[in-house]
Length: 506
Image (cartoon, helix red, strand yellow):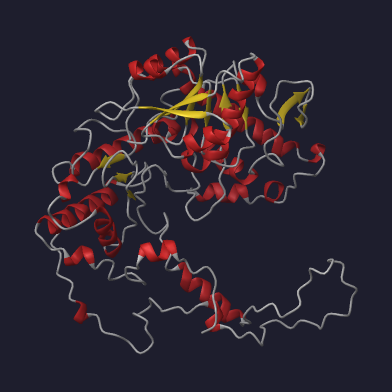
């Protein structure tokens, strides 16, 4: 355990500028700039006849003018405040914030991919289509499925795609009116019931067993002639592998229902187990989780959906079809069983390039090794913290993320939120908190395969030291945290209820 000197706020002097060494205080852009000036010479606009039907701006735009050095310094200073995977370990569970190899970025910035336009002639985009075809081959091989839709933009969009295919398949059987229920485990991602409800389904909750997994018997009890599908995450949101997934799929199929698998946690089993072998009919794959490109902060997502042979005819357009030595995009659903188009164009090209670059760099054996390393890292953290933090479902092996509850904090006066805030003072982004909702005071930690043993050891030692402080009654370390961040603890309830979304002059 690391010896940690006590923090004395009086030893942190105030400065005239508000800066702390090179950690500089940064005003808002509107406070730096001047509304009446600009850092760029712009000619006066000539008089023109407006063509906006009375919607043209009547007053000044109100943007601050800055010189180039001022603008550059502002954004560089702000960037120093960002916590990113390039700055340190990112323990967010259920998010897979893994390192993004820079090779991927180099490939995505090649002119033929970065400058491509979705409306240019297909004959001029054969290389891009070939890349999409190759990526589709990899994803279908890794999942042992028969078809794929590349166009969904992220996980929830992929869920919508897969469930629309299921809804179309049920309608094609003439059961659209009678099968209107979707089974969802109580520990599921919140997007699962939202997706089902959006498509007009009712949700029937399947309880989890005491060990955090779903039992086939519980699914059989919930099944009936009104059930269209079950939506199950595997590995599940508690970081556990659903051991009875094959029996669950068989039960659903025997009842005439389909099996949708939430692929958010595919990072734990990619290259090791194929969801198609479990009996999965549809599954989305978060390229931005499993195949690099951390997605925090609004980075582009991509959620391709793989489909079983039973659902393949209902895949959305557009999809790629080979015609001799050329590739073409099938853009229209007429004459097919496709449920149609769900997005304007063909998907996220930059994400396709990054994902394929990641796959080709790793190879099949490397993808499997990454999954194994992710699981090993999570279990290393679990084993190192299980004596000071409490796993809610007993000391069982986890997958790529380990879950703790707040039982070990009882009586300390420290909450999960307090503990997370204190992690910020130690230089770590907090783990996922209060999720999944089935675990009180949940702390979900996912170290990913990207971290070295040394990085994991320091992270573990830090959490053990924080745990010791909580148990010894040093509540000030937690309730006043963070003290060393650019901004100290804010009133989060007030911020959520009365957010300030725009700058106004005092």
